[in-house]
Image (cartoon, rainbow, N blue to C red; front, side, top):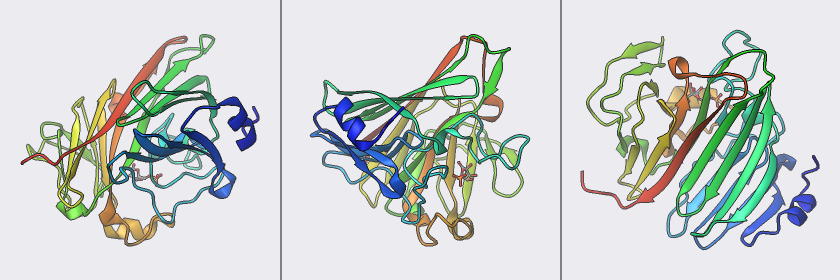
Length: 298
Ligand code: TA6
């Protein structure tokens, strides 16, 4: 399927939507509407920017990110599929699966009644058909549908995550509410299952946690940017929280050494024990929704 800037521009004439050649030759859909501005690369169906009107940018992007076919983008909302983290058996396979490093096909583009733009993208991976709907408005609504082909040889299990990078004023001053009663896999050092803390998540060092059995909204309180970002979800039982801190940032070539204070990941996921199993012909739909509000009192 040809998806050049010219081809897309002629096929999807939607007010507030244009297509531009991004870095690395990656085609970028740019949304500029009264409700919100933002961008989505066809590479990885990667939401790279989202800024509701009247707000500062909500998503974080590394200054050192790569933008190249076959390479992950460091920031925005990578789609992790069909595995999370390292491949379970093949160490030569790309981390977090292949969905984020291949070009997706834009299927539809339309205006949203409440303002903003809806994009729908698709790809197929192994015997799965994926469709991803991005509603970019005052709220950012993401819907990831995975269907296993009817002629698949049997049931299959996959992991998935919308690996959302959020911009923060200072990681030392933020907190994340919503996970107080959830156990978590602590991946810093050896992986350990830890009990619920009973408190909001705060950051005084590297945090890499897979919270389990949780359907809760997460609310990021940011006193520096004077806002709250709510991440709500459906059909997701895991939430991943990550900040690489100093040493890990320095080890990542596509992550600036001094960038760690300005970001945190709140990831909507089905991973580990919450991997999804489908029978042939079955589908699963996971959603995430990001919204920005006033900083409420503690
Ligand atoms: O979501 C947290 C995590 O699994 C961390 O362990 C870290 O590896 C991060 O994802 C980024 O992974 P990436 O492959 O994008 O560098």
